[in-house]
Image 1 (tube, one colour):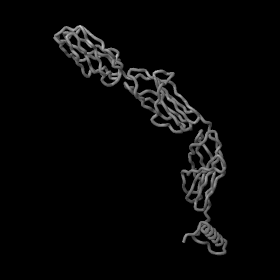
Image 2 (cartoon, helix red, strand yellow):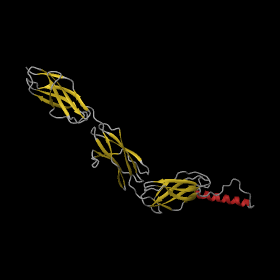
Image 3 (tube, helix red, strand yellow):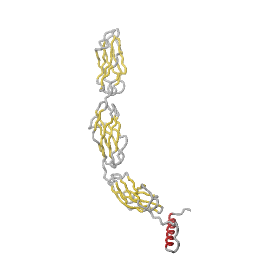
Image 4 (cartoon, one colour):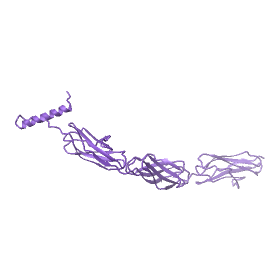
Length: 339
């Protein structure tokens, strides 16, 4: 049969009293009679490690030889509390044991009330109401890092962000070819949270121009405001030389022809594009491409119209092109004018 805690405490008290009567000579002492169980004693409630949004609250709990079956800290902006969270380091024994918990997501520069509740099989003890004040709100601490191994078109940039106790809601790298404009931005791969220590953040920048100096900096925001890091720079790798993917002569007549080719800039701006031609492999003549192919990464058709050719003659030709990575020259090809 299950007895209520009240009847058990009453029985324990009666048995303890009978034991005392026996000791006084009124009757024999009761062998194995349990003594009254005391509820936990609360000592030295205090708060430490205060930041703008967090605090650690602690107290000494003496279980009086009984297992602590429940332990919670109540907290809030008034003595009515409104929030609670479980303690760490429960146990047994006859000496005070410190229990604690870290409170997070608090409001900056605010007074909070707290107390501990500790229970054993005898009941629950509530500690005294205590208070602490969170620190003032602070902007994130930021430091722009470095660019890691830039390629022709991309790079990973790094920085450190200290949330200063306030949750960071936005973290971005601003970048561009001018330090005063930062025409683009990229999100950090993850937000640094709300702690009080610097956290490394990174982002991958894509779609960059080869062989170009870029400026970048970190920008981080919490509810206090936004901090921006110092300007840093990196240089993207040069592109590869252009590649001639195909070439041929079309619309060949007695004295005219059109030379065409498929030219891949390989990500570098093509600054020179010229067809060389002549009646020997020494060429000797040249004609510029009608249009430059730009700086893409796929083949672009280029061409040049030739005039003043000799009828019925074999001609050799090739294409020469240059980008920031250097020049390239295609293999030799031929065509023969109409007689």
